[in-house]
Length: 72
Length: 238
Image (cartoon, rainbow over all chains, first blue to last red; front, top):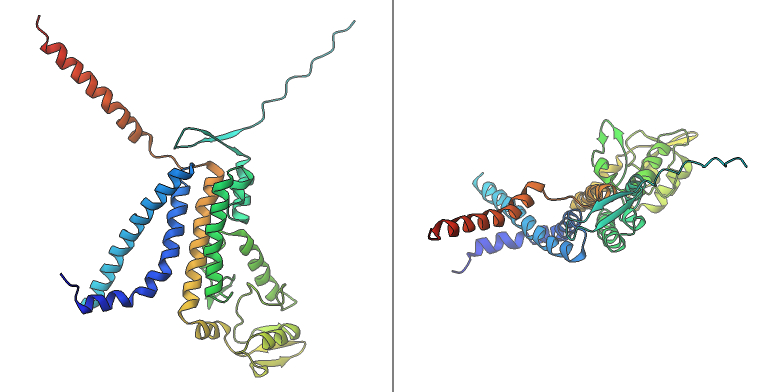
C-alpha cells in the first residue's frame, strides 16, 4: 500500500521537529537507563529500551496532535 | 606499675553503600551529600568523585552536550534569571539543575539590578535582557552597542550617571532568533532536569525495581515444582 502524498507531506513537514527531538530522546533514554542500572551493558540495553518507549509515546502524541489539528 | 588507660576504639567510619541491581555488587557512595553537590555543580562530577568513572564520564558528556547545544541554538541568550512581573523566567528553575550556570546567572541578575547597574561579567553572558526604562551603567551601555548589531546609541537615553534603555531587549532576541530561542530554552531545560536525576543517582545509587516483582518471579518455579512433586506423589500406586 503506497502512502498518500498528503501523509508524506505531513511527515516531511515534521522533519525539523524529528531532527531536533532525537538528541533529546537519546539523552533522556541514557539518563533514565543510567539511573536504574550500574553495569555498562545493562545501561546500554536499557537505553535502547527507553528510546523505543519514548519514540513510541511521543509518536502517539504527535499523531494525536496531527489528527486533532486537522479536525479543528 | 599503673595500667595505662586504653582509649576507647574510634567508631567505625561511616560507609554508605548502594547495591547494583544488575549484579548485586556494592557501590561505595562515599559522602553522598558531597557527591550530590558535586553532581549539581558539574554533571557527572559526583559519580567521578565516587569512582564510578565510566558512568560519570558518559553522564557528563551527555548532559553537557545537550546543554551546550541549547546555548548554541539560543545564541547564549536562553539562560538567565529574571523575576520581574513582565518577564518572570520560570524556565530558569529547571535550568538551575546545573549549578555551574545557575550560580553565574544569579550573580549577573543581582549585579545588573544592583547599585552598579551593570552585570558582573560585562559581556552580558547569562545576564537578563534589558527592559524599557531600565537604568544601566555607561560602560555597559557602550559595550552593548559595540557587540550587538541590533542595538544603537539611540536606544539609550542619557540619565547621568546612567543611561536609560528605551526598548525591549527580550522582543529583540525573539525577533532575532525566532523559533531557536524556544528550542535553545527547551534543550537547556531538559539538560537541567536530566541532571536532577543524575544528582539523585549520585546521592542514593541506582533505583531498584520493586521487590515484589522479583519475589513473585523467584517464587513461581518453586510453587510449580512443589505442585509437580505433589502430583507425582498422588499418582504413585499405594
